[in-house]
Length: 194
Length: 349
Image (cartoon, rainbow over all chains, first blue to last red; front, side):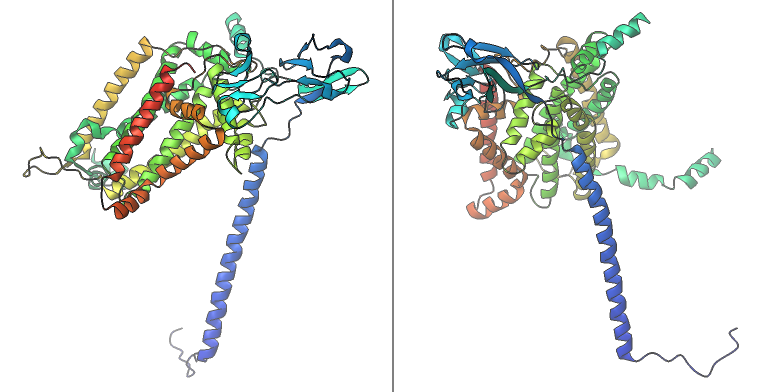
């Protein structure tokens, strides 16, 4: 193999051609690297977006319009306490004489500061939030603490009147009710019996 | 014997010399002082948390209907359940305390200065991860404090501009606390955060190895003494002693003051007196003192400043021409930290 020598020595291509080849090769190398990186980023990026969408909660349908009572049954002297299926107790009071939804008020007991539940203190005639010392008057306006500083009020449940029936938009289920898997108590009891 | 050694050496090609090189990091003499073992202490406690956490996970169920009952079962019915649960709780308390003390030691000895700035930032990440793990941990018990703590914390994140509402949704798995919330806390507490902490610890310790421990000299050291001693076995002995003392202490506390079970979470009633775990007393009191927006933004600002303190420190040195400004700021911050914690602990509201 090595014995046969050719007279023609390999001729190097002209300098311009070599430079052109080199820059073309560089370009192709860079372009394919970019394409590769782009492909990897796009595919894993898609996966990340899908995972993000998976983890982001889908819309919950925990609230519904619920029948409270007849509008005539609620007078200025007599408010009505409604207990939603989710366990929330809502006091619905009349604030003017008409029979439209705006004539009634249903104060939420969720503190607008950080979501704790307020409770009525009869001795101080105020709603009090034990988490960060917020207080509200009987109409729900903040009078003390961080909610007062931020000029917040207790939220009101949306109300609606159809004919002479009053409806409220309130949660349907509570945290624990939403759960339907068997509890440990039942499992351990079963184990003990076995 | 020779054949066995040869067999092993062929498959695990590491020489004794290389192992010695890896383990025998020269340790500066000041580490003979117990005060300087505060970095190893949280690392040891983290190990305790992993072991006891895995044991608790055998019985714990992360659903609103069964979480509280499963904790009651662990505490009252499983053999030594009360002990492992109490160990987990006390080791968490000690770990947070040790991390804070370790950070204070690093701060007041200015060990975060060039070239160790990045390790300070990683340490801050570890502190944040430890606090988050503590928070998600007590949320899992599903007692009143768990439920209302989680509600308050998620509404707090809601107040953060731009990303806040998304963080709240991701944390709770919905607009408010719901049936999916507990499992999210559980995944964070038992998988995501510990994995992140292990990774951060590896980088933290690797950087310490690469830079070497900050050298500190004390007046009572003799000049002719060698300035270093061996990591293995001398310093390891120290760490083993620290570990044993901690274990005795944790066991004693678990026996004398075992972890209890408060009233079960009631989403309809916030208890009249409610407090988070002690390490959040400061922020809880801060929230009572200021409006929500100010409290959240100022807390964010303080935490951000802590993250970049090494650079703030070098700027302060340039501006004031004094190397002690950070010390005075640190003393003021420590007094404020302790003061607010004590006030929150003493006052009912």
